[in-house]
Amino acid sequence: MTGSFYATGLGAPEGPVCLPDGSLYVTEMSAATLQVTRLFPDGDRKVVKRTGGRPNGLAVDGDGNLWIAEAGLRAVLCIDPEGREILRIDNDGERAFRLPNDLCFGKDGHLYLTDSGMAAQDFLDGQNFTQNYRRLPWDGRVYEIDPVGAKVLRVIDRGILFTNGIAFGPDEALYANASFTGEVYRYDVFGAAPPRREIFGNVLQPFEGDDFRGPDGMCWGDDGRLYCTVYGQRNVTVLDSDGSVAERLPLDGENPTNCAFALSGSDLFVTEVERGRVERIAASCGGLPLHYPKLGLRAPG
Image 1 (cartoon, rainbow, N blue to C red):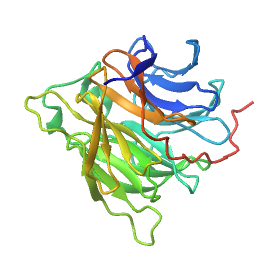
Image 2: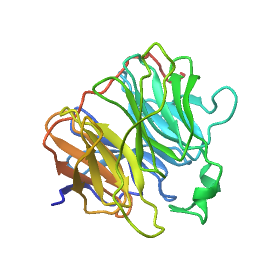
Image 3: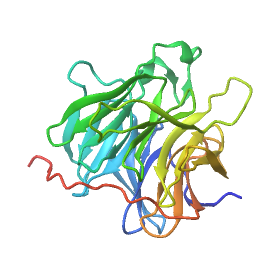
């Protein structure tokens, strides 16, 4: 059984972030929008910033500033709640970003970012993949970023086939997924040794045909399970603490892009691009608390 709709009529929404007052930030990736929008429980909405690129993942710090994985501008942007730009990061010190996709904060106050590994114009035609997209030279990466110093500290992993969702688990390990393989990877980023890629699980169901299906954004519940949207599969696939598939939560729309738990209660909000909606699912748990570091950054002037 599917849930209800928190918002409709959105332009390819992504990157949901839940706020204490019950409102949500989302990004809108359609050519007609290309913006960060705040959605309110009473149905009102406010455009926070039109970035003009292709805003994707979102995170919020302890000062209320928004961090945007801007795939079209090939940069990470930090803006204040009024939409004023504070800083921009567009390279890892050696090369320009290709497709900043999703991001989250760790307990160390650092920002962790997935870069899918290919510039959008090289593999996308609107919202659709070009022909032979899987044969392109993908170099998906996972980055650790110093948000105050506005620089990449290290490349945690590279050579991934379309890196996408990212989230810290209850074990404080970092989890990221690969959309082309369906795999979710685990990284011990706080250990003494350099992080190594470990396969945690896989969210894909068996299917035939050439239509794209793959994991997208994800978040953890306080039940110790990982909730992962699967684009093209019409569900949120839930992985248990051992990486096995625990259940699949059906959705109204076929192409979910990301999910986030409400800050109180057990509502799971899912962005879906096929119908331009935010779906609300009554889950059996709440969300694992996120990290909101206070960074003290302010817009110039």
